[in-house]
Figure 1: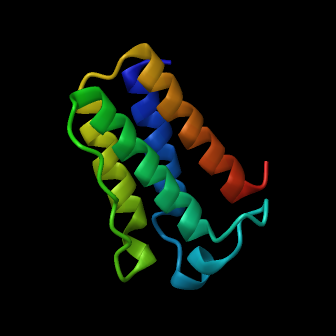
Figure 2: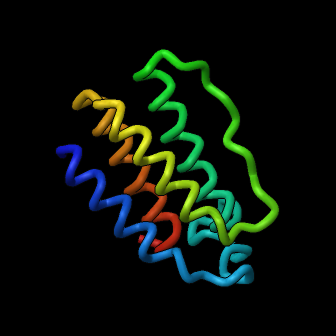
Figure 3: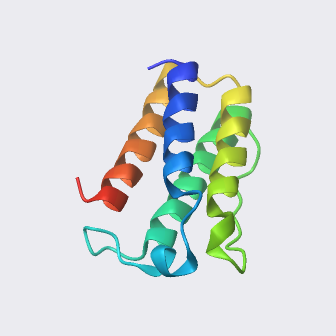
Length: 109
């Protein structure tokens, strides 16, 4: 996977979830492993951790904001930070796996 392909994958996920209502965010994932909001927040955290590891910045906790409606924007911004940092093929693969796993959890596939 390339940087451009990863960017498109993130964009597809964000496009899928950007219009969700609060009640849809509160719904459990297909696997029953928590809410959809928790799954997307975990993706944001994973992408932030990958960026920190790549750039040498200290890791930090991605804040859970008051409204889950901002989660798509959080993922988009954090993913862009990772992509701008010039990820290695291994980091791209890790990020792509995290995005795919989140999509699967949200869609039940």
